Image (cartoon, rainbow, N blue to C red):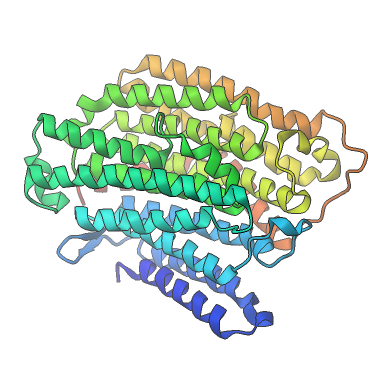
Length: 478
């Protein structure tokens, strides 16, 4: 059954709510295993469907290689978030004020947004596409404002919902124009009917504004820093990867499902957006002191690198973007795992608070350093390989100036990532600093993420596997 992974995730969300409602307080520890098992089962179901492609509901729901890779990405990101949230939700924190509680509702809302993202990448009808996007987005508003007793979390949720509603309106109007131009809601039947008209470019502008919000592309990035800082740390980690993945999935539907013939016409705009986004993200990150705001601007800069893949209309660009999203998820979640752990234990969130961490907790410092170097693109880590493929796409498309801009920005990013490494390894440790405890769940999760970040750089054969499969879905339409 092609929709089995989505059904598993939805049923897991319902089961989590039932367990939270029916179980006594001391037995609610089963909620986290239920959520984790549901996502792991969905990933297993996806593994079973590796050789399969097909459609349901008259072609409105499609499973192909592109959808498969994105669903692996969404379930993996969700599973890691569930594990990273465990300490906060179960109250095992050194600083009580950082706890976010309500684990049953928390996991059910998290699973709901994951299911929306999974439906989004398989949707082949603009109505289903929009409903899936809203199902993926609205729960994120709730998660951002989860800490009801924290003013910053409430502010983050309010800003997120206001700007998110505006972005959704742009998307809805853009899709409305799409229906008005073509007279149909089915993507497969109308892509050939689009013509280069002013209405088409107005539609593209509205959809760009809406999707730019999800991907944190300049100038639609204003929400990111405040929301990242105010939201609970595990939610920030999830936002930084899964929200970006949902935006990329939506762009895949539009670029490769609807407007593949117009990619060449829009390539200059894409290149300009990429250059401005990566430059602003990197330069503003230099002056940040709060580490979550720092990671927000890091995420903005990464979006600039990511959309370089759309400069090519063939499978090379699509495969490079999917591979980079996987790389970004692993490296970014590695860093956020360390941030979440340190925030849980100390309640501190400034970069200067990490001074001397290599002397008190050398394993955590090493994992965080590898994650930061991966984000900056230092070889032989996976970030270098991911950026290499994206830079190659831009170069083959003739945008050598963009490759030069991206290379300079990568150098700038190395400087500000090294700020954290300097605090951990060079700055003297605080006199009152002690070795902080690490839970087994966090240790296993962080080890797995770090090893994956290194292996994906040393053995980048995954990219070739993605490219071979994506060419079937993107180019041949199989």
